[in-house]
Structures are given as C-alpha cells and as structure tokens.
Amino acid sequence: MRSLIERLHREHTLASDEFRVLLSQCEEEHLSFINALAREVSLANFGNKIFIRGLIEVGNCCKNDCYYCGIRRSNQLIERYHLDEDTILACCRHGYELGFRTFVLQGGEINDDEMMIRVVTSIRKEFPDVAITLSLGEKNTSVYERFFQAGANRYLLRHETHNDLHYRKLHPEGMSLSNRLRCLDDLKRIGFQTGTGIMVGSPYQTIDTLVEDILYIEKLQPEMIGIGPFLPHHDTPFAKMPSGSMKLTLLLLSIFRLMHPHALIPSTTALATLAPEGREKGILAGANVVMPNLSPVVQRSKYSLYDNKASLGAEAAEGLLLLEKRLEAIGYTIDKGRGDYSAH
Ligand code: SF4
Image (cartoon, rainbow, N blue to C red; front, side):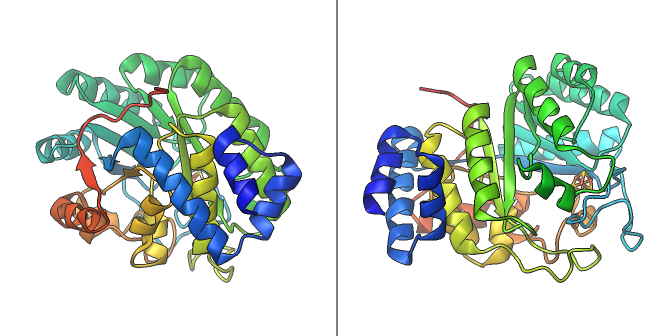
C-alpha cells in the first residue's frame, strides 16, 4: 500500500484497479501516510497559507428536487428567501472591509439569471480587484457566457457522480448527468476557473463509482475540487441514510491533492459539521481553502442543505479571528489574496 501511495505521489495517477485497492484497503497507518504526503505537496505549492473565500448564500429557492438536498423544491417546511441586489452588494462591502478578495455567490437553481448578471456587473464595477465565483447550478451555454462577460471568474458545479445509474438514484427525472457534464465542459471552454467534486458517502455510492469520479476529475482537470462528506437532511428522502465517513473523505482529499498538486481544494463546511476538528483535519490532509459565511446572519439557518450545518464561529466571516487562531494552532495562517489557480 505504501508503494502504491508513493507512486501516486510521484506519477499523479494510478490504474483503476490500483485506485480500487487504495480506496478499499486503506488502514489508519496508510491514511496517516497519504495525509502527510498530501500535506507536504500543499505546503510545497502554497506554503502554510490558507486562502479564504467569502461565501454569500444568495437564495434558497430551487426548481430542482435532488433527493439529498434540504432546499429541494419539494421541501415545504423551510422558509424560502432570496437576497436582493443591494443586500448582496452590502455583504460584499462588509466582506471587502474584512479583507476578503474572493466572493462566492451560491444559490439554488432559479431562472432569474438577468438579476445575477446585474449583480456580477455591479460587484465587478465596485471591486475591480476581487475574484467572483458563482455556484448557481446548471445553465445554458449563453448564460454562462454572459456571467463570464459580466466579470465572473470562477464557477463551482459538483458533478456528484460520474456514473449514470448512480446519478439517477440521486436525482429525479428531468435532471441528467449528460447535461451536468455539458455544463462543466462549457465552463472550462469559456475560461472559468472551474470547480467540480462529489459528496463522499452519498447514498448508493460504491468504490467503483468513486473510481469513475477520480478518473473523470483527472480528465477534466478542474482548477477547484470540492470534496465533502454526505450529510443527511431530515426533510429529504435520504433522511435516514448514514453520513459519509471522515476517513474516506480525508483519503479522497489526499488522493486529489496528490493527483492535482496545484488545485484549489477547500476544507468544506460539511467536514467542519461532521466533526469539531473537521476543518483542521481537511487542511492537514491537503486542503488549502476555507469559505467562511458572509451571508446575513438572519438568513443563514434557512440555507440548510443538510442538518446542523455549521455557519457560526470559525465558519462565519465575523469569526475570522477565531479561524485565524484555529489555523495557527495547526501551523497555518490566512492568506487574504484572491488566490487564483496557478499551475506554477
Ligand atoms: S442540490 Fe442544488 S440543484 Fe439540487 S435541489 Fe439542492 S440547490 Fe437545487
């Protein structure tokens, strides 16, 4: 197992069967070993600096009905909200004062693209030096192009699974893996720094589907890779499904770091929700980004993708000092730069 991990470190890839072995037979000692190697790669490329992104959850309305998601269309039990343009800009101003130079505008999939194009245009005009990341779901090619022309730089869209059967177990009729992949191809071609990824331990996921995901991400070469554990939400069809495991999440984080040494890989809120030290463990497994929440405090609990989602303390933009202290405790500091992808 050690020689397999060392080869992954050296050659940045393995054969499918070898990934299968790594995922299914990794003991604690091997996990520590791969986490340490991945951490070294991160330190060599980014130093002990962690990029921060200001997350603004622009709305929890969604036309889709993904079975795993707490803000899915069918959930009648949450209060819906949608931030207007002035409120989003006020969040950006607050974030800019705190030192953020990347804003991530994330929301459910709705059709009000014109409003988001206006918002991106306004942010770009007021803050020419920031990076604007969007995470607004599947759109037509022309809408992505208009987001880009308006000044957006990055786009996050997890593919969730590259296996069609698995995709259909996570999503209802009307959504398709082929459209998700078309979107990711569009985003890359248009010039976005593109992020994709998966939930680890999502229902019906297998070692084989994970290998397919690893190979797809290797082929796409995204600039950002989002890996977090699946966490159930009590008002979804997957309410009774078990959460993804910390061990497998940390293993996959390290695999992706070894395969993609320069990628921007967040230590996700889901990981911080799964365990009190989750964020730190993610960083020590090779992650180099955290995304504190800049959304208005009053709306945060409504953006409930899964149960007990962390949005306060070190997960909150107001908690930057706390985050700084927690990172210091493991030997890291915050980098307030834009933190663009760079292959060098
Ligand atoms: S995962 Fe995204 S697209 Fe699916 S229901 Fe939730 S917000 Fe909508």
